[in-house]
Image (cartoon, rainbow, N blue to C red):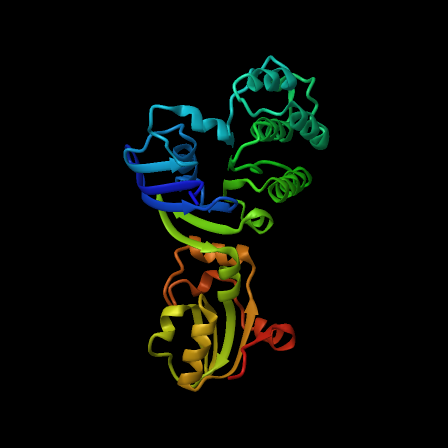
Length: 319
């Protein structure tokens, strides 16, 4: 089966900034979150996928078509909600009717249903819409095309919590019902829990990690254990924010199953673990997941959390 998105050595150069080269495959039906701070290159990558930019080097294939090819018909299968321009003096409804003429699969019924669902004041001129309603208009315009691939660039940035929750809930329902592929960029880590199957982390124009959400949640743990003396050997490669207070050790493990095996081989006892939220894991990855001891003072992992682990945390399996 042809993937929805394929980037092979894709690169985009600007004065003072380079995105890539990036290799990335997105299977059909996947929800992929592009996570990174502002200026990391997320929007540039989205524009490469959407065909708004041509790569300086490499190749971008979307829905089986080379985005640099002469035939742009593939774009009809892509819905893109970002900083989409609308006619500011036209009403929201007039803008949607205008767009309908450019997309063969446009569904007026879907547009009307989404307008009602969002409570979008479609009879208002775009220039009079609030930030939240502008985002809703962008989503209606993208989703009414009945896209096979939906691209969302920072879809909830600047929204108040209630509107953000409404937008995320609607997107989740549509993904479940329509089975479309979603690629969305965000620096709001709390959004990731709601939509993402997989995560791709971008920093300084580079794709630093691609991982499944379930895999990250299963592997990363805050750990405590007792071991006299210093740590040695390969276990130190897996531990972040390591601190020792006598025989008591506190750390974050990015591969807990491997870590527990190595620690037990070293004679560690009272090994306990606490699950980490996806947001916590993402922060570590974005910081570069430094080696042992490099960033211990920034984690917020305090000795008193050991008591919480002992009372309600997850214990390492006995072997």
